[in-house]
Image (cartoon, rainbow, N blue to C red; front, side):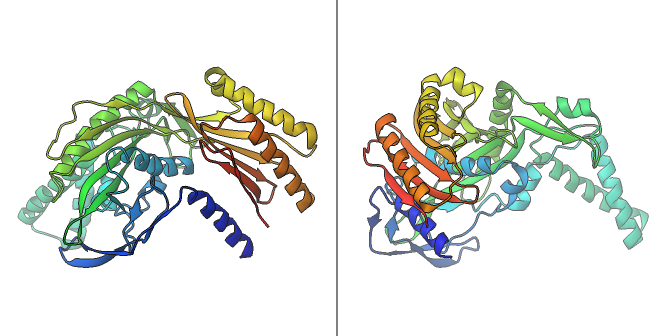
Length: 417
């Protein structure tokens, strides 16, 4: 327990390095789904100018859990949420807006959206199956069965029309699966609220993330082998823009959302076992009242793994710097086994570099000595125009970490006990 507390305190020191704002605790009023007014609390502090305050009690997303079931890479799950919040700051100022998880796109709705549309044959089969169950349980008259069938078919067609992934005639056909992959993984909603003069809060902005696959994984039989089909970026983007337009029209029909400004961004996932997450590739800001997307803005972001062929070809200078750093470490510490790096780039400019150094330690003195030596290399070798985080790990746990904010020449050091 003591170790966990120390680790959490160390993380908190990093988060609060931008001097948190301490204000008087605000109590606000918010209407729930049933139009009844409830008292909520805005936290009395803001961790930094870059972070949104969240209204309490915290309300989880109406589609909570769906993203975990649909996206296979934990890094993608985190980056999709954090990245959408990062892009939202340009449109919803953290000083003026409060953050809340999405409350309009519910779990049942989301699962329907993520399904495949049905073919006419599949619709008939679904109706026949439902009617078989109905007749066995109710034994209706011919006229009553006819009327019920019309109702069932109407419901099946409605559910099919909600699906945003393409239909497929035969799911057991590898060729058809490859030609008609499921492109869409998830639709993420975030809400942004402002406080009114009567001390209540209201929705004033929404952000929608459209998660698209880069690799489609499928099986043609239960328990059979898994197949993989890569989805080109151009195809993915074309399909994503079409899906985004459909999602916008559906949102505009929901109560209270007709005149809300909406940021929509398309996220391209990485493969399931990728050591780095995917990234947002395009976004558009839709004014309140608009139901049509006119223009998309290209987003140039990349998460880059070091070492990798991509880093070698596209970020050679940064790759060489990390290699030199690794060589300096290896010269003095025989138990060192390598450096794994992850760089975040915007328009090919490095914004944050995270390095993980796995090493075998035989005592706390080695941890302290290694951390001191690494601290010196940070001061001497790494430019200060990006955030830098170095995690020093044994085979059991995180032993220490060094953090330096962009523009600072004094890295923070934390040795865990």
